[in-house]
Image 1 (tube, one colour):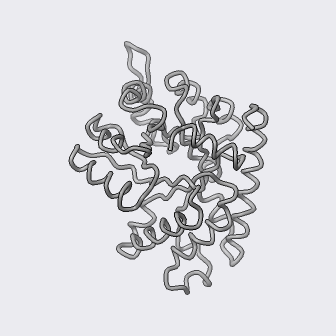
Image 2 (cartoon, rainbow, N blue to C red):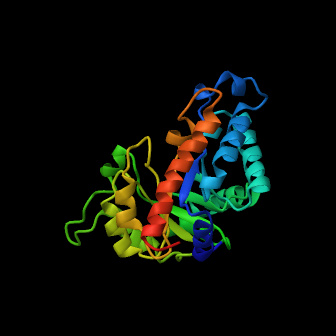
Length: 277
């Protein structure tokens, strides 16, 4: 899938929402907990309720591996369900992988071949050889961490070089952007630091950006769009808890659908404002 293919999906569905499938069983209603596979049942209902309003789903792998072997099985079934029922969805493994070359090769096989994800989040801080194995897969995407949405992002990412005046995240983006291209490389830029999107766009004007932090983390959607939108939209805005756990009763899927629809409507307005639809 190229950047243009993704833009076609965005225009067709009039949204650039990515719904995070980060299920927390402690927040499930009893009716879900009583099923044979609560995580899978929860994900199915969320996918059914929100797929019309999103172009992407993102599974944060920690929410599955923390449950042991059963969690991995729930993840596999979730991916199979989405692939079969909603094949147009862009599917992201939020796994934050990145290791020495031969290890990254195995990670790439795991997520791209065995699980069949379209994209994976990767840490760039071990350098090109740790990222290259992911970029070698045709029609797959590597999403590099650039400016994350957590408070601790300032510990390293915002360190500034006294000679060049560049933040560390800017140096990372400048260097890593040459490893791939705008059809296989995205960058994570948190919505909690929207003003930094302008600096990111100055380095990679044509790349797609995955923007977490809208919703529960308090990111500003108008600022994200104002600083980050490009001629092909260039944004996947991600929201997880604010959608999937907006309600903890048997109505959770209906409420999630309403929340996703409301965000979609905002995103549609922005696409119209920027004359992209």
